[in-house]
Image (cartoon, rainbow, N blue to C red; front, side, top):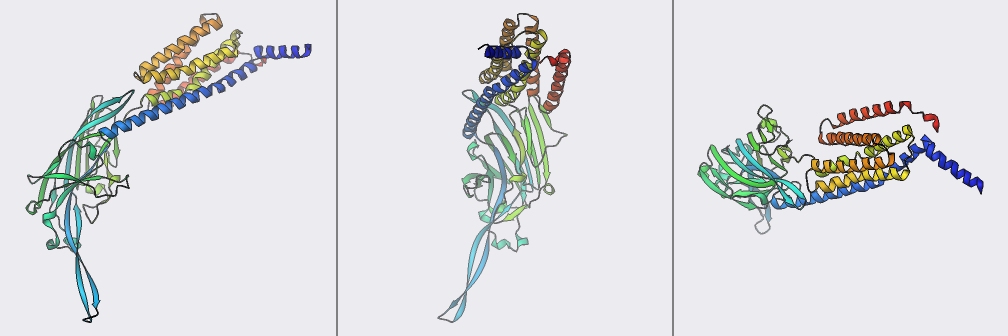
Length: 455
């Protein structure tokens, strides 16, 4: 019975005194703590998905993204087909002429728009969504349409059935009665559904005006109209004018200019109070014609405008912070390991485990507090709470003031470093790499006098 007892004592002595054993134990605990970290990442993802569901619900009721395609002049015309049938009674061929009504679509010669978007946030429970109300003023002119190039004479054009069409992605969000003035005559729009709704990707609702009088269809048809939307996410138009101008202003401070065309850099302004931008697109900048027969083309790929971008939200910041959990636990354990090795103070694996669990609690505190406050305040509360808890616990373990103070300062520096990285966009990788290099250099400097040959 003495031999097993001696063997156990040897193993216990090796675990207490061997640097290798301590390293293996610390590494094993770090791996074990990845399990609660993975659950925390799952919690953040679940809350983020819930937030997105609420945002989509708010946006669906308030108004979705705004895409406007128009105004377009719709002009009916006649075409004819002849069919010959053989009459058995008369022994002759009878020619029958059928008339077909088709439509030609003409885009404006000039299209100008001024867009003023006033943004705000809507809340539901702990979640919120950024939305806007935009007032869009359009003006420009058409030239008198002609189909002679296609062999269609003026006699076959049904001039008194001409209409103007506007297509939009956000019919629900329109907040005013829409009418258009053409050469100082007003025409009201009504909703039509003339597209295949099964193709939701390309589907746009259509508004059609009253019939345009023939005398209005002159060589220069000036038009203007106004439309107000409740919307979210983005505002875009399709540049169907031979020359298209767009001016946009908003109180939104974080715009992202999207689509096929960027605004003029010379006049673009972005401040903390909002932005101003303007675009000018001419017909040679886009690969489509100014008029079409029978069907309107899908021109979504040429749309441009502004995305009302929500910068990294609370859940994204929490998720990015949690990705550094492995680093925080590893470096904190490394500090305790170096203190234990250099001072010969014994730290039990259970105490390492308690310290690791306290570090993982930081992320649950961060997520739960940030749902009721801003991220900075949540980060400060969670960080200070965990740092004080671990510092006091280290004081009870290490029995001195010097080492716990060093641990508290190290954790403060580490959490500050991670917060700075989270806030950065373009330089996060660079700053993170430099920070990790400095940390590695400090560890190498501190550990240079440790005798690693002790076991």
